[in-house]
Image (cartoon, rainbow, N blue to C red; front, side, top):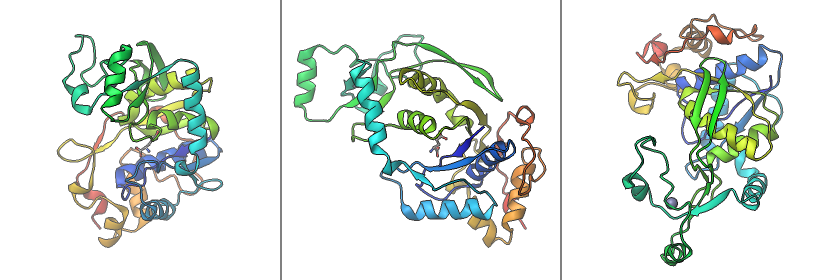
Amino acid sequence: MIGRFAPSPSGPLHLGNLRTALLAWWAARGAGSAFLLRVEDLDPSSRPEHEAGQLADLRRLGLDWDGAVVRQSERRDLYEDALDRLVAAGLTYPCYCTRREIRDATRAPHEAPDAYPGTCRDLPAVRRRSREAEGRPPALRLRSDGVAVAVEDALHGTIRGVVDDVVLRRNDGLPAYNLVVVVDDADQGVEEVVRADDLLSSTPRQAHLARMLGLPTPAYLHVPLVLGPDGARLAKRHGSVTLADATRAGVAAPVVRARLAASLGLADPGADPPPLDRAALPRRPTVWDGAWVVP
Ligand code: GLU
Ligand code: ZN
């Protein structure tokens, strides 16, 4: 079960991210498998210093990985190739919508409020030309035909989703997350994706994209998030939430690691972790109370 952790270097990892990393590492290592590290640095908010800090935090927690760190910014050809194949298969169309237009569009009662309403799916040529003349570069979307996809998750069971016309290339020219994650996981031979469950709803999209590209789908384990006291995803504004904060408060990295495991009802897995009992993991989010950074 080759595993991976795929952080976005847009800031320091908080202890919720690090708990997910610990589980991803444990799932792979506990099965005697390789564990890979992929830096998802396509977005312009990525910074090399954040990458360095994130990798240092993982090492301090005793997490190791095989081979060199893979950076998405160095793999653009791979994503272009996948995009070309989807375009050639007639599975894409340009979308000229602004965020506001998508937000304000009318939707059928059965459509999710944030789903793309399909405005540009069958745009007549004259309308397309007039939108092109406005000069705003289009995004590229998948023609999903509203396909229903079911995915198995080790913790959540069968996840069903209607795939929307997800963005494949952003209108700033960058290949979009849902595409690159599928291309990378397949290219790297990832067999099990362990990540936070805020990405659960994107999983049917990714499974569908993999199928359209003729790529294998990995197994999935979506683990609960750590939430701030306000119920929002843990973030810097919630106070002392990083490993550096814990160190400053006098809590050593091994203690933090044991606390991360304990928050999931698990004992510290040590350097050579036993098999991770996936089904025994809690399904509820953990609410942050600051105790992890109290000496
Ligand atoms: N880079 C994503 C994040 O940091 C994770 C993507 C994934 O695990 O599929 O949220
Ligand atoms: Zn559109």
